[in-house]
Length: 413
Image (cartoon, rainbow, N blue to C red; front, side, top):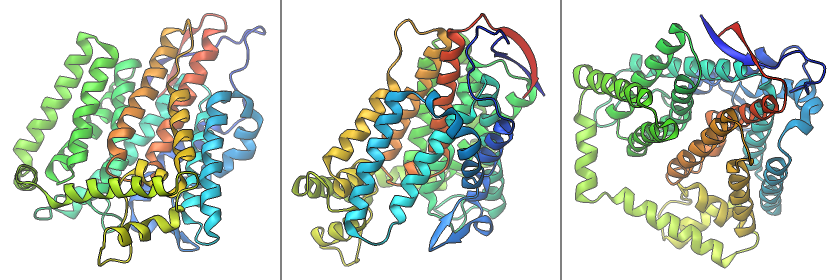
């Protein structure tokens, strides 16, 4: 397949976008493709009681070959804010003195953001990375369909790895980026078919299941993409994909789980009330421990104690509550600063830079929505990978804007 992409002219006056070392493209492609392995139980590797996703391997290989030589290319303000957030979180974990699983997961996510961003050396790399994520998502979708429909639960693309709600953590960021690529890049027929297959199969699986935050995420993505471009072509593309998804769901799926969850919501669902209580209690814990929190390791036990649960611990099911209650308000403030720095648009930005910034903002909106229902969002591979892709696209677009005019080139995609 082929697509028209743009790269910098090889002029001696043009600044180098990255330290151009061989291997960046295949490392990025492997990182995105190996997301599929994280959805298959047999391919998950256990190290010290933690399941390590295989996409971490190419990320680690990129550290000495790409990240270190190109470290200064990462936006300084975002880099500083992200590191401050990580070190504050790390301090809260180390205060407990044992059980460092949360720290390892947070460190892996931050490392992945840096590595993926610096592996994007051309706009073409962004396209290839997004294509690879779509392939990974399709692998998970096919596995879910092969597993069959479970009554009042739907399909289970992740099998026994996680509950039904975790699937949308993998799927939603990929669908957002697939839609953005389709609307903002010149892509070939095979890429269009790949995106259509990923979107339709994901919508089918999500609406056949009971994950309401997944439903909301799909609808939000459609609205965000339409608002981002504000073109009739976008409305037609989003509308066409939505219609195809609805037709597939209506003709081939079942509304059993969908209707059951709608009825539960209307009648008042105990799980919804508990989520609100979990968030409120997490913030109460943060107010009692405003500087350092109660540590991420102790937070679940403290939640169970305060809510008088029969269980020894309760999950926050909320990323904001998890950060505030576990690490304190300074860490939460650092996270907010990260978001602000990511969403800043440079003055006199080129259209490409504006589009890249828009993508980061859309991802942040999606993160806020989905993060209100899960604390694992930041640790699941697709989010740090897609954030890295978006930052990398912003870096490349900014460099292109300060160099000689670009020339169109044909390249495989």
